Length: 320
Ligand code: ATP
Image 1 (cartoon, rainbow, N blue to C red):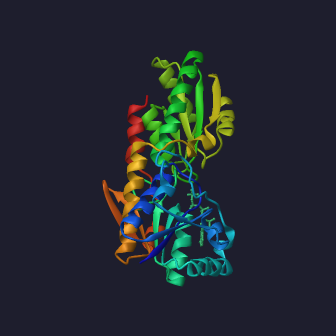
Image 2 (tube, rainbow, N blue to C red):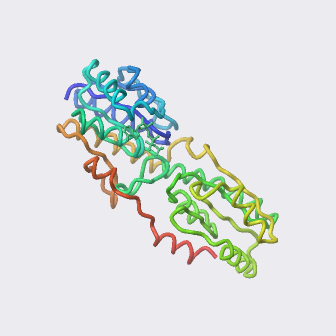
Image 3 (cartoon, rainbow, N blue to C red):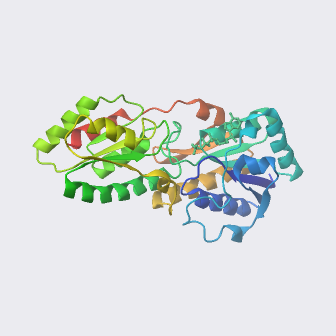
């Protein structure tokens, strides 16, 4: 393979730039040319292509966001859109494609592979950690660390005023950001889409903790359940302690990637190009049990994300 394309798609995630760097540098190592496609599938459909050199990716390993920018592109769901995408690839002689994004982006890559024969490799780039085939997605660790920083600060003021803090984190339908930031911040309660909550049970846990000497409480709620404001209102109607909602919001998506995310980016990017260099396509890369793995893209996107109940029980046991 002589020339490959690279795009970032869906929601941005810290570490995408480090992955872009790893893809470009590994491709150059193998003597391939790399074309960067701007704004995800939208740029592919509209022929927004930039050649990338060794120095195009200098000084970006530490940057959040994505240098190639990202977009959602509904036209990619149509046959006409997909044909335009393939026409752009053909026009530039791009023989293989690396797609950095979440499950939606992988579905786009799958279509290109399955229906048009374009070898594609997916790199899981999303803060949500909502892909079953990989233990971690790129950006998740940094996003959780950002949540921890904010929760630490909230804890200071909540303790001074003896309040309950309801903190809303991202993750769409997946509770992993809430689960990991809840455990690592020492939150008493997490509310996630995977487990139905009982407001009376939450109140009784809070009362129990107060009776045992706690002066404040942290509740981390995943956006997929409801907003912090709505939950705080519901809770305030059944408790006399003062409740304050905070929505962390898009801050979670930005910032310099953590060591863990930079390491994943380097290894995912490198592995993706190695696979293309070996003539493989239609695969995704990931990490399982601390080993970098690759898997068939169809198998990967059809796996249903499971929730880690053991970690949830751990939180229950150590949080009060
Ligand atoms: P995140 O998890 O951060 O939201 P994502 O990759 O899942 O990232 P989506 O918005 O679901 O984000 O998908 C990104 C893009 O992938 C879509 O805008 C669309 O262009 C393309 N895409 C999604 N699903 C399909 C599909 N079934 N067929 C073709 N292309 C798709």
